[in-house]
Image (cartoon, rainbow, N blue to C red):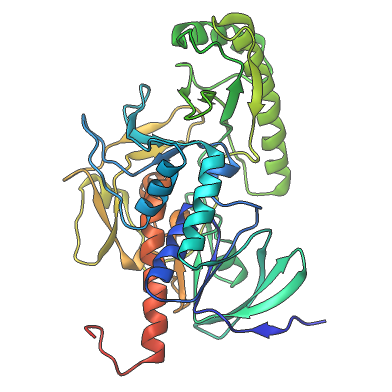
Length: 413
């Protein structure tokens, strides 16, 4: 039986990570009726689905934190603060970049509350399964949820899925990885419980222990420096990014292998801590996932691709709608990230055309799906920047609806 069409929204956003939340809030703030759909039972993207417990991209590099992202993201940070997170900039002792440390349950609840306060209609456990379109516009999406399928129409759409699922279903030709199908490595951050918090984490002991483990262990780590770790706010658990996985392709078989290897490695790595590092005698694996951290998959066609040179020169432009401030962080070699700083004033402008689909007039991109070459992508994929591109995409999608309804009203009002 075919799905019955419904037409209740101005803007439909696919994906509930930082980009999707930013887009929903940006569109709602512009007066649009917004539907946000998310495949999981919670929002947050990598922060809650992949244990990436840090908002990167909110601040520029440097000896002091200089804020690069504000807007609707501040609504989220304010709600997180009300739940007990400081949201203060934290300088990673490993990379020296400024991040905001997160606790995933607080992130889930904060995003629920912020979207509800802004009157965004949210459907969890829901995917976009199909689309209808004309030559140059999307008309509706078929949503697959717990109650079956239904078709929902809107005037504008935002792909914030990270994997360009909406663009792919719409028939746009997507690039895999860097164009030669080489993908940034996936990662498997974990949470470790049972640590004696009175004992400082000894990085040198971790390094020594893994020198030995790598000789015979089943999952040698590519991070000889002990990885990236921090104390999770509120709970005090150890957040640890030590495992990276080379992705051969985007097949389900490859992702199955990556997920299983990450879980096996996590078990091994916590055992190494327990047996060799002071303070971890009672340590246990508290959490993996729910899924592996995906750094890169598909790239849909945009009207402009931000370039590495745009970032390295700190290019500013009159059509900029968001700032990229996170350094180019290339994970082409698993476990060996290469950093290049943003030039100019420490940030570069992201133009509106990076957020507009090439080939569809009413499809916008947010977060990891925006137009960017391989170098620029290694910067713009982070969650702080995703909030900013999401807000801009959502506001633009809402504006296009208003202009379609009132074609004789000039852009200046």
